[in-house]
View 1 (cartoon, rainbow, N blue to C red):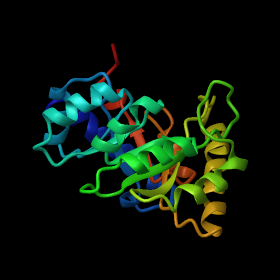
View 2 (view 1 turned 180 degrees about the vertical axis):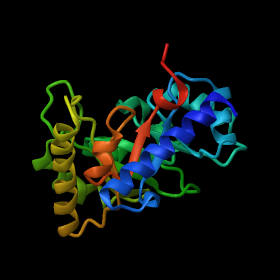
View 3 (view 1 turned 90 degrees about the vertical axis):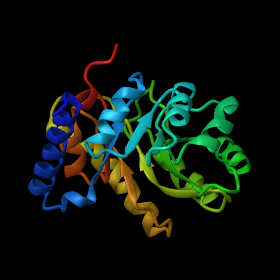
Length: 227
């Protein structure tokens, strides 16, 4: 078994253990393997070990991988910031986008999504802890953006995503992630029909799962340290 396969097995064990401690079904938490900066071979190894969903931050790098591996049944998630001049690539190549934070970007993606593709699955990135260097809409603005995005053709609004500042411990991590879950619940009470809460990474997935995450984004714990 390869190192990547071993690491994937270890992450699935962590997810299962975290779900058991929280009284959740492990099937309710999806694993997104963050393959940014790693080559095609790493993705192929992960796929051979059963992983099908991959997250990429750098759009041009991702498009090269997506094109090279187009014969494999993979699902590609854009989890990096998007500039206006890159929306056409995201609309044309990705299955998911986790980092939507502006209506202008959503409108461009809607206009540029090819008609033969399924709708682009979208999460709104929320700045839940007010970090000054973090992307994402303020929680107070999330509902208005969600309502506007939900009616755009070519897009399907799925949920929220957050990347809070690193927390000092499990309890502090849960406190921050719980803000995202509370906002998720508020938006659903307003009829948004969300089903995805993308939060938690290699170092804090247990706190995220305890707080209601449905998708964790794990890179270094699968592929190793990035160069």
